[in-house]
Image (tube, rainbow, N blue to C red; front, side):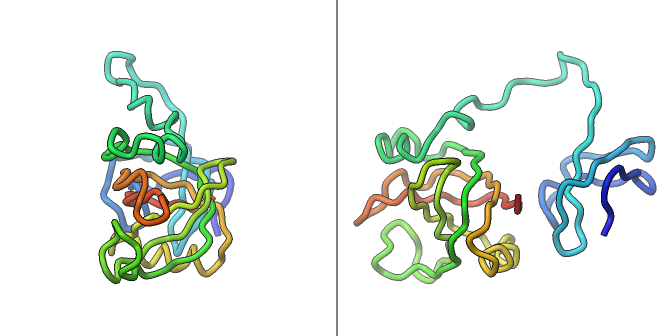
Length: 170
């Protein structure tokens, strides 16, 4: 397992998740820091400089939406993107009682975000299902997610439903 400072073997693709889409390229002169490992993949961190005119601020609501905000304004938060640290408790399959989830749709039962102890349903797309199974097999486990709010308050019990875009074990 590679640890510490790493150097690319050539020009390599940077991906948003294991087996995910390429989001950039890193040249061989870069220095990378290993921060996590998953099935032959290494999550890396790098540092560098870019022109201020070439970047823009991300959606500020990503950092400020809480689970309580979702329940308080379920219509206003629908479609918002969140970046949260959660604790995965289990992987389950939706049954007819889980309104807002499709029948037999896989979802993570989670708690969070951060220090909140709200229950969350995180719908898992097919592209993340193998990783979700691995994560859930070690539950409870902390995970960083990027997700879109499907429902701020599902029926009948008011649990928020999120659509996972990425999952990263912390």
